[in-house]
Length: 129
Image (cartoon, rainbow, N blue to C red):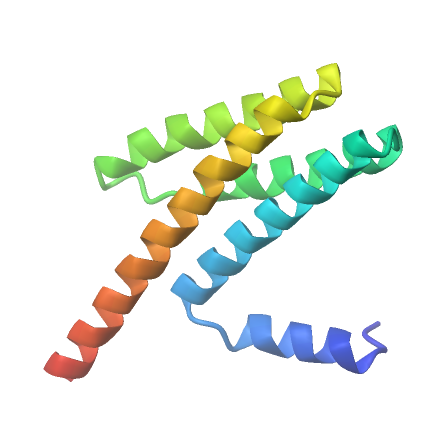
């Protein structure tokens, strides 16, 4: 049951978001959880690190699972997501933030690329709409 106003707002924003907005929200979540996991490593809070690495991995796995395989670029993205998950796993096992920082860097680059693509599509829709 959704109780707080923030939770109601968040649920509403998810339900009314476009596919590109949802994709960006997924990237934001994976990046945020990855950074929180790194903070867990920095503070020697291994539970915080493990829980947040798990959340980041779940999002990256979802990104990979929902790829439209009819596009050739999807194969490259699938391999990239698999590698990002591998980096998060290694970072969690070794309690070393180097691999997690690399994974977050890739996620930030992908997020930026998808954000730019979404803007291009939106501007083309306006021109042709």
